[in-house]
Length: 482
Image (cartoon, rainbow, N blue to C red):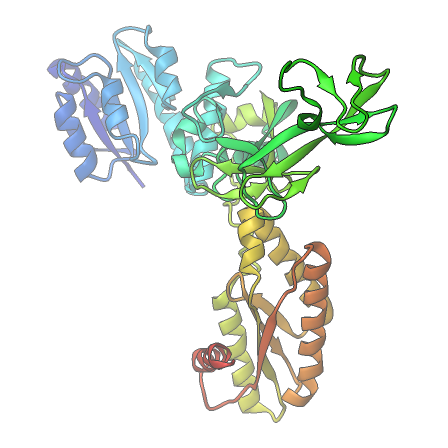
């Protein structure tokens, strides 16, 4: 397969020279030439380009302006062709494949194309977003000879930090994935790391722009006032400091019980605690609930439900260097860690096979649906990541209660589907009831002041209806049940 190539250079004589080199190469096909940035952008947007030869200094737009304008066109590879090596460091920051200084030899041209072809072969396996981004990061670290790849503080970043070359290549809504990509790269042996610090983010949108405040445990209002509590040793009176303050002398403290003046803290009195008063409900308490409010999504959560993130510095391994040079394939998995739990299509395929089995033999099977009716209240409080963890715990629990021939999936975060093979409704009902009981115990035991409500529907698998029809009926019955 030939790579579609585009030449962008304002020097007409050099375009002719480079065209001849491209046309002579068996692996390249010339798709067009542009003499300025505007023409280049039009060609890049209208044609399927695999490789760009790009000049840096042009009259209307620089080569870097072109790269900025079309940065979302992937996986196009870029070879910079410049009359000077002065732009090399900046160019490699853009994740280019190679940098050729004019005039260059045929041998140097072939070397650059060899690198392009290695990358192209690798990209047959690594076309996912995280693999392309990681490839750019590894190349960035290698070409700049970075010994310690560290995060940089940034007020504009979602996390408050950015990793150069990595974070800018992610959409703002997915910036937290930078940490996941680096963790996966370390697990695969491309990087090693050293711990730097920790920080906390919103459990819903992963933003670190949080406001912390003390709230009333009775009504959750943050409109609370605090006051020191005083214990007077001689008469054993304990009360808020306002009880002791003298209106004529604000600095003096007089005991309201024995009327003595308090003089020396630690000798005739101490301050054992702080008293809080809620201005909304007048509740008086000593232990406020510390909550964090996200200034981006407005989620309001207890601080123990925040997500802890670790900041690390990274060092490139020999395997990482090989990956940066295209000698090793980068093939990381995408981020969906719930694919084996929430999989309606998989369950429907299994049910279809069970229906076909029933057509061939006489036996009973059962499908069931369990609705976790009020569990969304927990999800709202603990956020996305911990909600997924809870769903997986429920999934693993249900799997431990069924036979190996049975199947379970989550249709959604609140609905569980079960296929119980070779058991009729009568035999399957106790199994479903036991599962309900175990789920309720798991949730209620781990979340104070919460009682999980469940409902279920159980139906026989029939051979005269499709899997889709039977699942639709199952959901319909569940929704119509009181």
